[in-house]
Amino acid sequence: QSVLTQPPSASGTPGQRVTISCSGSNSNIGSNHVYWYQQFPGAAPKVLIYRNNQRPSGVPERFSGSRSGTSASLAISGLRSEDEADYYCAAWDDSLSGRVVFGGGTKLTVL
Amino acid sequence: ELQLVESGGGLVQPGRSLRLSCAASGFTFDDYAMHWVRQAPGKGLEWVSGINWNSGRIGYADAVQGRFTISRDNAKNSLYLQMNSLRIEDTALYYCAKAYSAHYYDSSGLFHSWGQGSLVTVSS
Image (cartoon, rainbow over all chains, first blue to last red; front, side, top):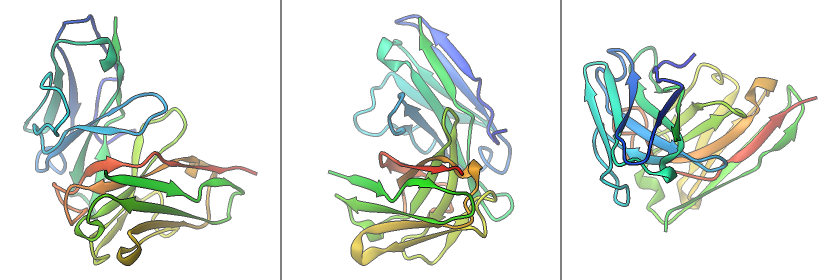
């Protein structure tokens, strides 16, 4: 069971706006930056959003991140077929001796 | 171009050991913390271990504490993971990942770039 909670699946049609939620607690999302990763089958993960809402160069503006309290979300606007992938949220967790925690991942399907 | 290339994976029996390596290039290796992250077949991502830029601070997931040892050689631009007393549940693709900062243990220290992974299969 993952420390961060994501819906296992999400879907949308081309052009739609889709959001993926990530729920945590005070020891992780509530006090630390959230990161989002995209992973295609058979490929390594790639960073989409870092430090809650920062987009690395090369990531389309269609992807945006936000954080509020102990939750975060990834929004994808103008959905495209090539966005079909797995999406993971992650954050540092201050509990115990400290660790990185992940969400269980959300499989995004473009209908 | 930034590159992280893992090696050393393979098939190993339960209870045996394996050492993974990660060769880094395209960035100033000793400016950044590094991590190991694994992914069991068909499962999600799981953090394994992190190490500061100067090896001054190291952390492990509970699942591997006492069995795995992370280390780095900044002169060789290399990261390592010594895995002892391997268990069937350690079977996974192991990724080497560069951090965003010099310290793995803070809010800014998560994963900036990833290698392609090295597959470790623990089976009798």
